[in-house]
Image 1 (cartoon, rainbow, N blue to C red):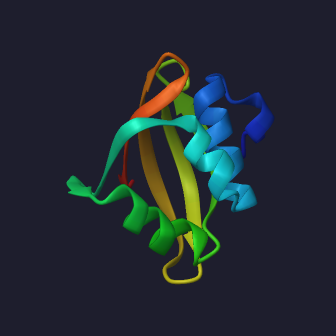
Image 2 (image 1 turned 60 degrees about the vertical axis):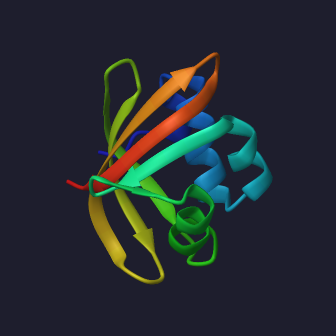
Length: 107
């Protein structure tokens, strides 16, 4: 069962998922802390390059199935024009209302 984005527990994670699904680069950047980092399948990636390739230019979309750790961990079906749909896990580090790091990978 999908969790509505508006029901996600952590405001920063909620803003992140909303920005991804709306393909809103400005809102996405606004929720990230300066110097934010990320990894995909255990390997650190260039955040700007990865998000452009996996989210914005390929119509990335998240359907959240489960959240845990006070909303800082998500299981979601992520889809984009390149890879189709896959089950993914997301983990967020939030500091002072902004995401400092996120990690994702296939679940």
